[in-house]
Image (cartoon, rainbow, N blue to C red; front, side, top):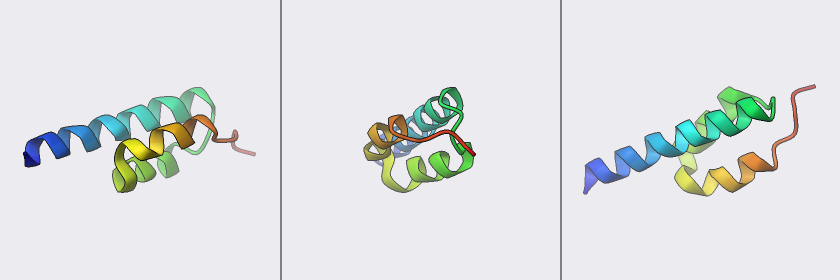
Length: 52
């Protein structure tokens, strides 16, 4: 069970990384959000604004 949560968190971090990189948003911030919130951070990463 714990391994599934670790894999899910890592997958969420990677998804947030890829989304933020493609949208030219703050990658570190979104990877951290993926770590904290897991899959709940992914939809919000799509709404990320590009870095200034």
